[in-house]
Length: 55
Image (tube, rainbow, N blue to C red; front, side):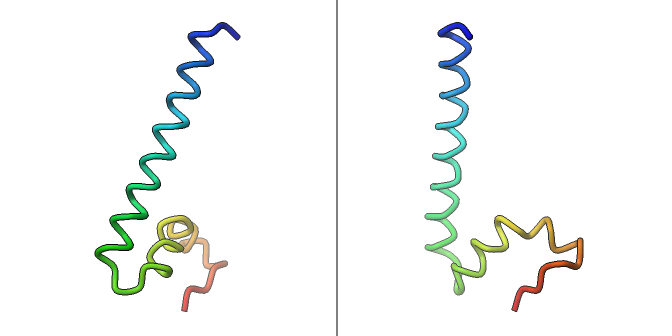
């Protein structure tokens, strides 16, 4: 892999990590139940499969 391609992959990865951190901060500030909200943030799309029980 050349340097530019490696740099672009790393830049994308770092941008995604920063976006998740910002989302966590916003959830922690505005949510009444931040732990449940963060769990739903990651596994909410799997709830339609009826294999996860969130209580």
